Length: 132
Image 1 (cartoon, one colour):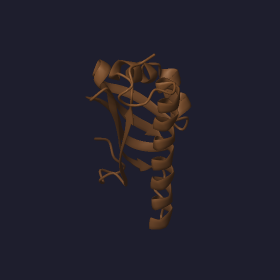
Image 2 (image 1 turned 60 degrees about the vertical axis):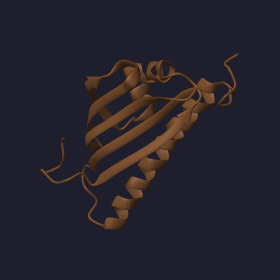
Image 3 (image 1 turned 90 degrees about the vertical axis):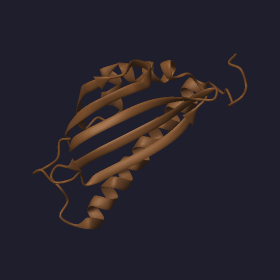
């Protein structure tokens, strides 16, 4: 994993969101690099593992240095979208509270992406209800 100065990543973020759509639908939303620039405009991503409908793994550069992953796990009648970010801000904030603010900002942004996809891709479908 890429880190700054060989240190452990300063941000180790995990998020999960259930979407009532198949993994392939979510994978398609992440397939286009233009989408990456919309979701993470301050990051440069390079795929190091493309797992198709199971998700992507990227190296991250730019405002953060490290790795990021979207893992799409089939669950019941939908998908559990797992998001992992292991990275360090560049430059690394000197104060711990500034680092915590950055971690919180990244966590909120990740959840906003997942909930935005949920709203668009589910198109009003609720779990357990067949697609229209």
